Length: 206
Image (cartoon, rainbow, N blue to C red; front, side):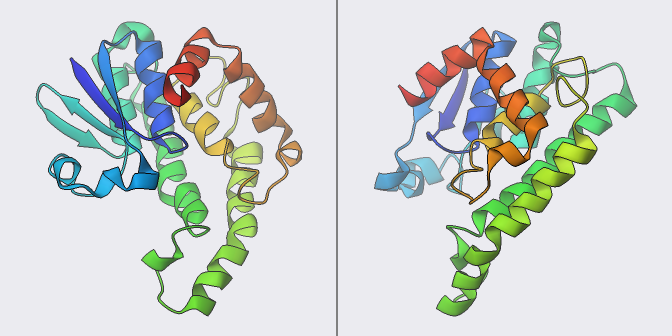
């Protein structure tokens, strides 16, 4: 059985949703970041990065959201979470998910984790001040470039959708007005109507 290590309010929600919608059997292990459980020795032995998500499989451990989501889609092809028989379409999914991981998530992290990039308090404060602009530019790119509708990649729901759903929940805390991105806002509402998402949210935050 798969084992997912997660923490509420983190990017691990995307993986949690994907596991539920794939119909996977899994055990969810909740970490309390306020108690720094992700930095305890037992967890660092599993994931030395001290981050989530971590997915423990029978063959080993997988980290990084794009990789974990791809693993789920390929392990449960009957769920139809990715166009596994179309190399180009699959690459477009990876392109989108890598953009969320390498660009949007990093821009978001400057709000509360500026210490990763600087020691000067003024520099950290400046990075935090820049977050609404930097993250807003990412969502503008998604709204006007990537997003096809009604789902990220068009008519077919995919592993891009729980990923976008998760990062979009950070808009308010990053100083953005969700109403400025009507396609993404409608996508949030559409996601909340899915039984799998509702089930995941109850488990994830319950």
